[in-house]
Image 1 (tube, rainbow, N blue to C red):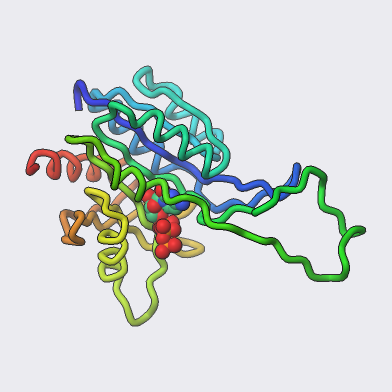
Image 2 (cartoon, rainbow, N blue to C red):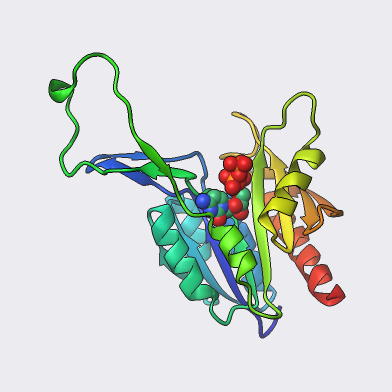
Length: 228
Ligand code: CTP
């Protein structure tokens, strides 16, 4: 990847509810950081746009001189940072777990039970923008856009079938699909991915620790770029 500029979005976004609470997710940032480090080790200049990432995981990326880290909190901040870094980039990989919804009106004060009417409370949520779909539809000539999809397929559907639908819907050049569950995919060092192209065709499968999977992803990205 010598001479290539790469952007990796990683970690889980946090959408504020009030000054002390947020809506988050279980992403540790491990897979995204592994993707960034693998690219740097192959000679790329990498911008890692980091949402919430476990401190020890982020420390691994910070030691590489070819990885520049930009911090982002919310989905909107991550979108702005990724789009800015993507200008002139050859490859953008969205490994971040981005909130699909944010709280419509963030409270300036800590919400208190004292103000509540009873034992139930509702939050009004509104959709965030789809960063990956926007990158894919606005990609510059020669730019490769890669997404991730964490899926819990229904019993009547395979991971491949579910991944195919998302690959076509997102329009990314490559979609890395993995199965997740409470004990699978998150906060663990191993992962298994299906790599699908824009038409939903299977390009490769990868299994192993998150670094091995990251290396397989870069092999897939090189293949896709070479075929173009
Ligand atoms: N993604 C994004 N912006 C969002 C949500 C997701 O860029 N607002 C990106 C993720 O970084 C990932 C890909 O889209 O690369 C797939 O994310 P996922 O959450 O699996 O897809 P969704 O768009 O949320 O689709 P669905 O709600 O159908 O699962």
